[in-house]
Image (cartoon, rainbow over all chains, first blue to last red; front, side, top):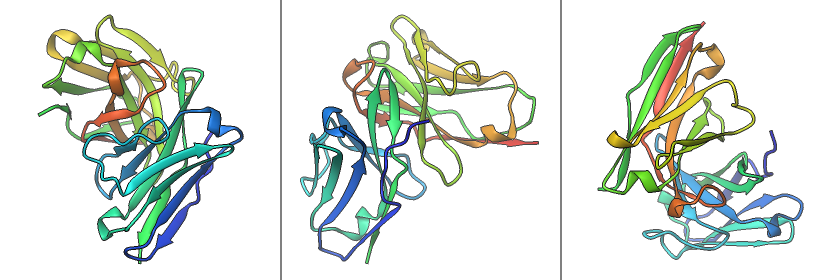
Length: 106
Length: 122
């Protein structure tokens, strides 16, 4: 099945800014959602429809989507942000997930 | 608390049947689509299909059509995922999810169950 392209891993120093990308041709025309999955836990929706934060998600987490790349940005990274991050969009009534990016906080 | 609570871990042998459940609470279960998401060991997420409890409309993702059965009983706010004949490749963690805002497509999954591990031995 189709899978969005995400880097396998991203490393960032504590307190710095992490950017996780999700690439596909003309993804900017799609509505992208982002999920955070910490070890041993269910995923959590952190960005809805490109750039909207659900209630309870800190404003350190933001999203953007344009051209061929959707981006999840986490500023002032904390140890608790270490997790797998998945992007997703809907295509013809079904879902396409990215393969996931492991964010490591150094 | 608004939540989805799933049934417990299952261990089965290949060829056996299985039905797992997902119960919603503290929200209007009938008005939100429920989906089932598979996560195979060490792998990513896959949507298997969705169901609308209000009228039991079911939509299967192409990769899972014919392999599973999704159903629900709105009277007890519960959705189900079942297999008639399991294989070792069905070993995975299965999550039920709620689709945000009552929409059928195009939205995020804003509520997740805790996951049901299924292990199938060959």
